[in-house]
Image (tube, rainbow over all chains, first blue to last red; front, side):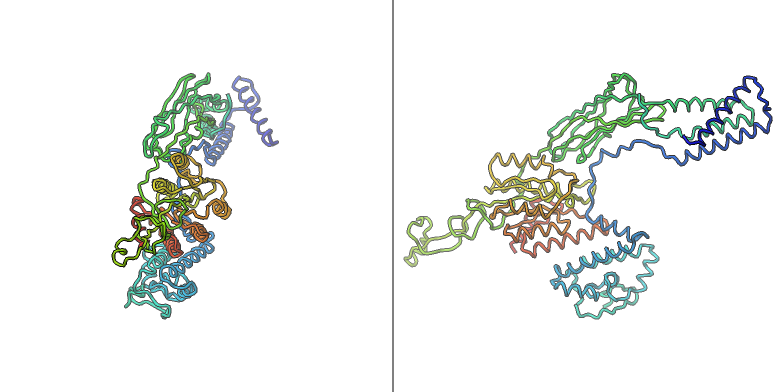
Length: 207
Length: 422
């Protein structure tokens, strides 16, 4: 017990004893005037409010028992990527998470070009660097190609309120999915300094 | 009587008492002062409140302790107060095994119990493959005001064992690697069998029924017909039980490990029926190995193994796993003529490298891959794409792959087999 608390306890005991003495009719030289009672009431109110405030800051403690009725939960494949995507859209750890996302998607694009499109690993890497691997300029630019994204796409995204990063990742995955299936595949030597006009943000849609 | 721990439920009551007393003093009315007096009494009770020692007898009864898969099992939990004091507020939460889901009624009970009284609750779980042991039952006791609480656990040993019959619902085609014993795998070795292989010059001692009499009639020469010899294979079913394989497309779906074990048990039965020697191994932190063999006893051993071995439990393992050591150990155990059927969801690149390494060491590998991917989120779509690339990678390396989606395994096998023949 600290010294302050001991002192407060002493004062409290003395005050209570004094109060009981007055109730019993023993005069201690204190008149129960309105001012005195007002001071006592004010002190009690202040102390009472302090207790109430402390209660507001104290959480109720209880045993938590979990949900034994539910089967143990296992992750859905890809949940790690979703968590990384959330991390990349928040302020903390934004850049590290973003780099990891881009690296992973780039590796998958290269691997898809090798396995689905029959390219060499070097050729596939070069294709991803130039953006010639896809018709989608948004996906190509996301993986590092020097192509401009059409204004219409940016405007649409702005109006929709969707996160830019999520939308670009989504487009990139969709573009990787089409590798080896798209008959309008670009060739390695294609000019990559592409811009889109009008509403067409897919280069393939322009023709 | 022990104190337990304060719940802080009545914390702040002192403040209200003081405010009421202040109001009484200020207004000189007796009502607020009386209210403050009641508050003081309650505060006094809260200060001395305690929970009696909890001495409970808990019994758990299953309607069937060895059910079939998907059978509903009723669990009856009886709680008796063995102490001499009344428990006014008792909450009991049963330790349902983590792999089981409760389908009817909560596995918990809230009651007050006089000394010697018994309370009962019933809930229903759906049985799935495996040996399921109930965890400790959690007991939470409070005093009537809820000011103090204590938590106890009571262990009542209960085990439910669900051992599915090994049924050969799909026939698994094997690759060419065989043992010296006669069986059903067609080899390129000419000899006795069913499928025509070649005709060679007659040698003294060749069986008379294998002489090509048409050729004899045409040319007058004696020639012997040779068939592709059929031999038995030695197959080891390796199930990927790493934590990476404990995935599912949604909360209610079977996990990839459960489906892999299902595939392995179907393949085990089918291969044993066709005279092959079959072994079982787990590729995960819990070591499991059953030497390749055949016979009725071996089938019974495998059935028990698939159902009860901790390596094949439907819950993710907690232990650390060193995959390269596990691969080396597996390789040492595999005989040179052993084929491998690797059941894995292919959720990471390491599973691919294991299959490729075993293939490179001469064990003809077939991968049976239950598909655990979904399409609900961006990450799920990427995971599906990555798995597709791993399947292609394996096929490119000459490894047979069975991509098993939501359809029955037999359908996936038939589809895969038609692809292998092209």
